[in-house]
Image (cartoon, rainbow, N blue to C red; front, side):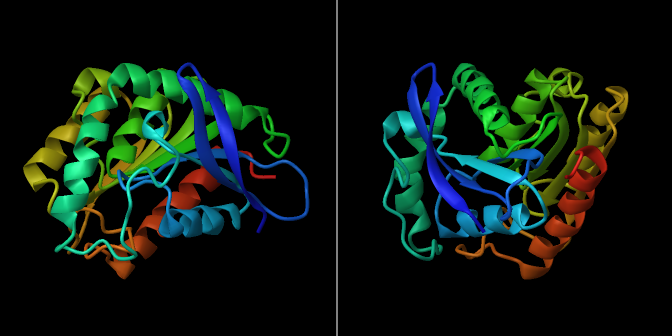
Length: 244
């Protein structure tokens, strides 16, 4: 599986990024994958490679490039409960500094770069994201309705911008929520907003999960839920992107 580290020109400098894509040449549909707040690290590279193995060019940007290249903060091999407070103490200022304006400016740059890669075919792209990356993916899809055909977000605060933001979505959507993040009532409200916006979507709470369930280097990891995530994501991309 070919992989490389790249530099994406943005309005505020250069964002480092990881890319994975199928072997054997040719052009493939593009997928912009937003990491969780912990950023580019072995587990994200592994997920990008796995997705690329299904026929996609996957680009994973360093969200916090303004503060330095990834890893922006030092991360332990396993992000367990005992280290989370210290890690989050370093992360929160970066997350708070990452304003909606920055998110949208970066999204323009990421999509421009992704679609210009020689291994990426013409046509629409998908965006996917985890945790805070799920919110960034949702904002990106809403801001690029003509270009983003599929949106998937997992354990992400996707409804935080309110119903108006969801009304701009034209992508086919899958939201996979953690049981600890969303009550059934809150899920009902979110899905009602998606219905009102006329969005084609699936949005569900993954049973027995806590926030971060896709990430195998954390205590939140749930192997069955990670598999469910692939079982939802791959058919979504297969339906919406011209694979091959």
